Structure formats: C-alpha cells, structure tokens
Length: 396
Image (tube, rainbow, N blue to C red; front, side):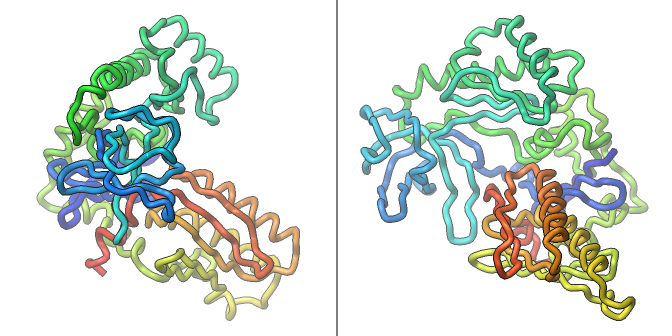
C-alpha cells in the first residue's frame, strides 16, 4: 500500500502518491493561503455571447472572466428572467455557474451550469434525482448501499441526484456518507432558496482546498499514510481527516523532499526522454495542439536480434509508462502515440487492450480512441487543471 507525501516546491505544494518506490501520481496544489477558484459556484453576469465559439464569456467578479461552453449549459438558474434554452442567453443575464477548469495558458477558466458537489464518499448533482453508483462497486454492494440510504430517510435527498463513490463501499459504518449527503443537501437547499435574491458575483460555495480535494479523490485503499513537513498543511489535514494515519515529518538531518527523492521524481516527470526497463525509451513532446509520444527500441537494437516478440514487449512497457506519464505530467486533450510498428494484427490487439486497461486506472477521464491506418494510437484525456510543467518547468 502506498503513501502520500506532501512538501513545498517553490511557491506551490508538490504531492506524490507513491506505489512502492515510484510515484504513481504527482499533483501540484496551491499553498493553503493561495487557493484556486476551481469548483466554486458563483452568480455570474454574461458579458458576451459568441455564437461562433459556441459559448459565452461571463464575469464572476469585477476582475475575473470565465468561459461557458454551450455544451456545458443545459439547465439554467437565471436571476433576471426566465430562459428556456441556451440559445436565448444574452448579454446582461445573471446565471449561476460552477468553475470546472482552471485557466490554461492564454485561455480563461471554464464554467458550467451543471452544479455538482464532490466529496469523499459521494457526488451530489443539483439537477437530477435518484441514486447512482460507481461502476467499481459490485451489484450486490450497490443493492445493500441503496437500501441503507433509503432506510436512513435523509430529508431532502430526493430533490437531488447522488452518485455513491467507491470509498463509500469501504465503510463499515455509513455515518460519514450520510453526513456528507446531508451537508450537500443543506448547501443546495440554501442556494435554491436564496439565488434569486442575491447580488451579482455572489459566491454560493467555495470548494475545499486543492490539497483536500486531491486526497478525497483517491481510493481509501490506495495509501496507508499521509506525510508532510508543512505545519499549516498538517493542521488542515488533521481538521478534515480525523482518524487517518497522518504524520508531521520533522527531521533536521534530512528533509522530507530528499528522503523521498521528490526533486528527482519531478525532474523525471518534466524531462523529454523516459527510459523503459527493456532499454527502450519514450520521447514526449507537448505542442500547442496535442501531446506527441514516440516509442523507440533504443538500447534494445544492439542487445539481441530484432524479433516481433521483443517489439511487442517494448510496446507493452511503453503502454504502461505512457499511461503513468500522462497522470504524472497531467497532460490532457489530444495525445498521439507512435508505437513501434508491428505487422501482427494479434499483437496490435494485445497492445491496445493492455493500453486501455492502463488508461482506466486514471482518475481523470481518459479514452483510447483507436489506432490509425498509419499505426498512430489516439488518446483523449479530459482537461481539468494545468500540466505540472506549467508550475515547475523553471527547475529544469
């Protein structure tokens, strides 16, 4: 079982989930005093509707503007008038939105009218009804959880839609799940009762700090201890995760960063070349339009004679490392992978099936599209936050 290590890197927090000795996941988070607006809910004002861009620009304060794509604009809570469809949206409308994506390079943060509250055990959606379950929960456990929730008879539950997360399935006592559901119902009830009477730029909900969201999104069984050398972070974690195995690292002889080789792992996650155990390597090149990954047999060329079995081995190692690197670097959008060409259709099928399995371990929605006629594998990964290189590239 792994460990979560949290330490300061420049003016950010660097968090790593270690699986044995290698980080399985790297994440950057703001210091507690410098939090982002991601997942906050605002009463925003429409500044400009741009049909050609299929979206609108909204102000959430006098200084900050966000982008609302039309495909993220279904049900609407509008203060100043009734709006039947998104096409009726126009300048001056005041609507409730949630921030769903951070600013990326020259692009502004993105927003949605689909309001959700994400906790450790469940997700609550403002629009919708009923109970859904994580696909990782067995049918038998889904039935048991569903019956327990019904028996609890939580007031107001049927007004909203709940998705029960995998972490809830690990609970012996479901009280933490019920309390989380009640807190989300209270937040949405308050929004429902007051949004029509609030002034523009009101913040209805401020999300938990990034560090808390990061840990909440991890399966409980993926780590056994959380370690940090930052006292404010330790205090924050202690408030939110009572009963967890937390440790404040204090050793003047060796820093936490050196103990876990955090600088080395970060350097590797920022470097262009990534070596594979077999002697092959990946070349990872982010561009403005996409991320391009090239698989090379490398040192393998001079070790043994070329064989189809060996090329399959290199490609399978490359598939596993590609999925890991996408998580570590937090690359998103369109990803193109040029694996070593294999003539066997059966080998190509094995490669794609294995790659798909590796990609499904990602907590961010990642999809294997297909292999083109030229042998290029297409992958898409949802854009949620900025690549880790955007925060730490200056250390290279």
